[in-house]
Length: 420
Image (cartoon, rainbow, N blue to C red; front, top):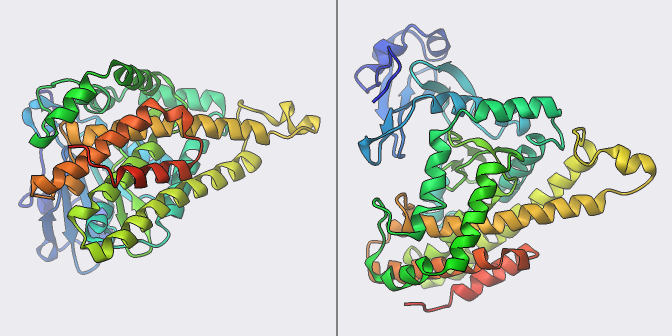
């Protein structure tokens, strides 16, 4: 397994000695390492994450590992992904200010990022499982997706700058390959690392025998691999968002690449829908309807904020080579219909991605806690089945879903279905 020549994995015991000479650290939490409290909190699949707390302040220390933590040494990964995460965070801060943690220090050789500790934020997925509502979530996420999509594209960027950025991120080969495998390919055949709830075997067989569906998935994979429309977060799910009761931030963009504009909001929507379908495993009947209704309202409002912000940017920041004013406004003509057409294209891609993500989270390697934390499979499996069946419907009929009300109505229909 190839590592940087001086790369050393951090641990709770070595963090103080390793970081005490970094000015960006000591200027914030002091030089007296005896007062530092270090706790490892990384529960993800790829990285070490530590909280370093001192009387003066608290920091997050994140270090990439040279393998997939979920699997172990048998699945090596390049450390350079930390470089791309750092570059993505810099761009997200520029394109959607205030939505990502502030970076204090980056060391490429050690694959190390030291950044702002978000407090009292916790992972959004945990709040959704607990039935907690987050004010302003839809506005934050809708605007983040719109701003990063628009400002990372040639609707806004100079073509030379955008092409240079595409060239830069094209070096992030191994991480997108995980998406290409775990998201677009593995759910649809008996891949070695797949696992699933046993009661789903019949539905899974039907999904994997549906060649029309697999054709649609592969067409979307071709777009993901080839369409460099904008820089995408690449892994925008409820585990990549940290929230309080009224504030949310986006973290962990190490899967960033240039791809379709609809990718991030599609993946986000899928994770909201999985939270929705999983709720009967977490809520009492008395609380269920209200909370599921809030999740669907959040999906609808996220798209409303996305559309409104995208149109605002279209009218105020359309300075790239695409749809220039010289073809429209400068000739006394409106470009509103062109903007609507672009948004329709984004929605169709988002719907397809949404369905695919709904499948991979119950059929592939990396599942999520919305379903997995429901220990009784007799309760879990029927909820996962609803999720799988709606995912298939989205994939097969993406072009026929013209608005988000149709999507949320579809979710309500599948939420009452019995598929096992």
